[in-house]
Length: 307
Image (tube, rainbow, N blue to C red; front, top):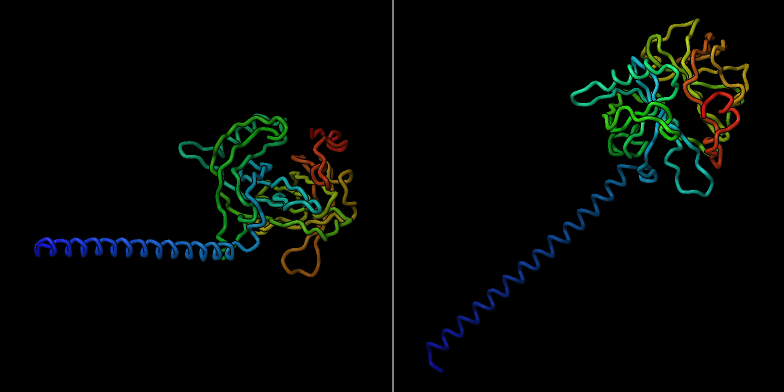
């Protein structure tokens, strides 16, 4: 073989080997990077699950809510109970929120208030929010942080029963979680009527405290005499018990009714009495708070004109 040709062949072999080694190094590097990414993803996934705690058991869902209040707007989640041997029910919570309605270039809170005032015969206003995990409203930083805003559309009337959409795709800013409780499958419904008092200034409401099936959801506006509560006290919700009244849909508080209730504040050992005058019943539902739920209008709902 010619020496020059032999020399060129050797160089070619060296070049080919060098290229192959570089390709091998690149492949190994790529494999290492891929393994690192997979390991990182697994760690992050474990970290996320650890942060969320119990929250992954609650699926993303559309949590329709009642809208009440004019000067201050409140949302009351429309709940349902967990059925035995059924998948986790995302609506198994009673929740009341103080919110502010916002939208760039307009004032949806003012628009809602004016619509409500011009349709006084309409009791129910509702909101259809985007999907989210309800317990995120009260989640800690370790659980992924608290949900403080979401989007939704407001309806005049009940959105599940022919309501009219009046404010589409608005921003809902959660200012305060007044009340949030997950239903306990072992809880027993109290024998006496129990409500949560909340609101601001002269605009006060009572929401029936829901405990165990069969139960009912009710929100009324009230006037309270015998004590003036501060906005700070009302922001946390005040439990009021009507000791002389049986806890049943037919004996719930009615419009124009006057009733005496008992409440305690903070760690007080004794209760105090207040007089309540019911102005208007904004919402009443009992069928969906049975197990299994009943979606047809009940006799008591018909009697109260909540169709």
